[in-house]
Image (tube, rainbow, N blue to C red; front, side, top):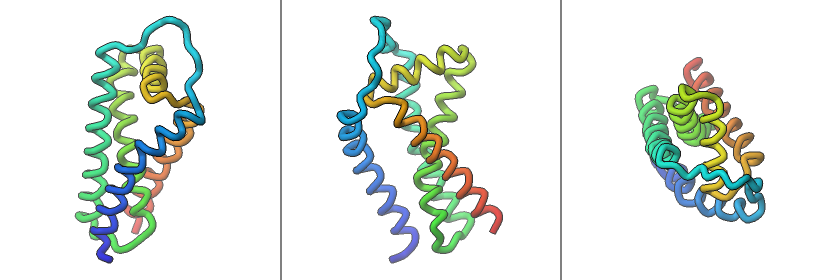
Amino acid sequence: MDTTWRIALSTFTASVFTPIILRSLSRALPPRQNNAREYDSFFYHSIELWSRLAAFIGIIGAVVFFILARIGNTPWIVGLVFGWPVLVAILFIAVFTLPHGLSCWREFWRFYERRYHITLRFLAPLYAALSALGLVSTAALLSR
């Protein structure tokens, strides 16, 4: 199978199965109970929505990087396809929350936890690992 098709197939598979997996995990790993303070503000909703777009741009960026760099068939492609979307989305969230203070960053992630009904105790290490995978894969491919 052509490498470009493999990337497209893996991206499609990730796009389809990620919501299903997150729904299952949200039942197994519910978020912590929090106080009556409501985090559902328009600010957090808009950041979350735009971070999805940033993740999609990360996928497109990974594919474009792969094509422009003329990378052969290598396992590092997986790191690009799964790491870049998470990395780009987290960087986007950081750019728009951290200027308002660390408390805004924390409140966004509490909002995210409530929105998707899954604990950050699971998501934070997963997102960190995927981001690291994206960075390591990029470094490995650039060093070739």
